Length: 108
Image (cartoon, rainbow, N blue to C red):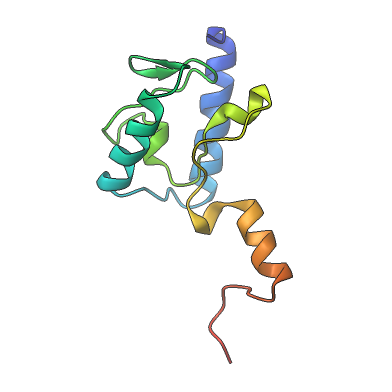
């Protein structure tokens, strides 16, 4: 479990990223899907992630799972994340689409 200072830093960084993206939210169905993934993880601790310390639940208040600009923090311990930002906010997917010539804009 990260220290309270580290938890606050992580939360504020994720919240800033989310706010700068326009505060995009995941659907309730997607939140529940991610929650089910998290609760099977060895780092899940009742109501928070044991890696980053963020609260994770099925609601939308103070819940990292609700923000579609967030991803699973497993990469912080050199593991592959179990879930990523939604497509519109996933930097790797955006870069891949650019390389493939799909910028996401309407075709002309």
